[in-house]
Image (cartoon, rainbow, N blue to C red; front, top):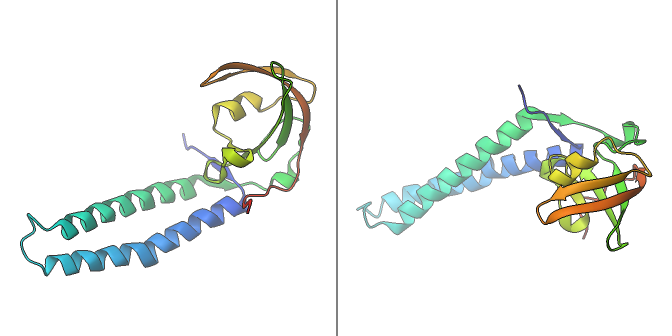
Length: 165
């Protein structure tokens, strides 16, 4: 079965830009460095050559990873989805039942996630346990740090801010 990777157009374009940079800037630079290192002769003790070959392998691995993600990408416009229940692109406002602290998360694609600003991946353990829930629901989630209980205060769509500068 194909792993569909939901993402917004922002995430898709961000990944495409990274592929372009790797193909047109970084990889040709490494190939040039390998050629220059080859001119230095003996490869056994040629640190520049080995470092450049390693860098080339890392770039090729990242390109393969990005192409797999983009190949499975399904661009979703969250503003077109109903947000009566938690779904892709929903912003969820919850209260931690233990601390009474209010937390807000927005569910986005893996390539777009940034937990520091409240953007969590669709595939994260928390997001998976929130999907389909509604306002007023109490939800007990299993997280790496243990169980937490939240009450869902609000489920809504609001414009997602990816670049919090």
